[in-house]
Image (cartoon, rainbow, N blue to C red; front, top):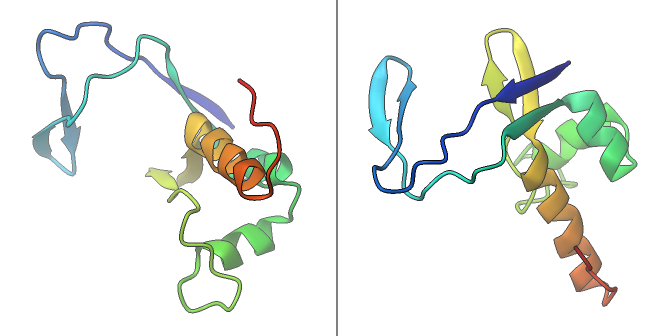
Amino acid sequence: MLMKAEASNSTSIAPLAEVAGRRIKAAAPIAATPLRIISVREAAHRLNIGRSTLYAWLDEKSPSYKPGLPKPVHLGRSTGFIEHEIDEFIRCLMQVRGGDVGN
């Protein structure tokens, strides 16, 4: 499952989004590059963990809970993660261990 959401490159007017039938104003301008939503399987693969471990990291009641892990996005019956948020989480892990983050 690989879904793409088109992003607006207009920064003069704050973009609007519709969530659960309500229109909301975005807090910050959306980047010019398209946002990608990756599957749970892809997110787990990038983190080099299993899907069950990923869900344990998301569960606040689990001893494995990771509060810095981005929350999943639910689209109908599908669940995924915003690609750049997972990438940023990995960069933060690299920074914590003292590794070169790079770009």
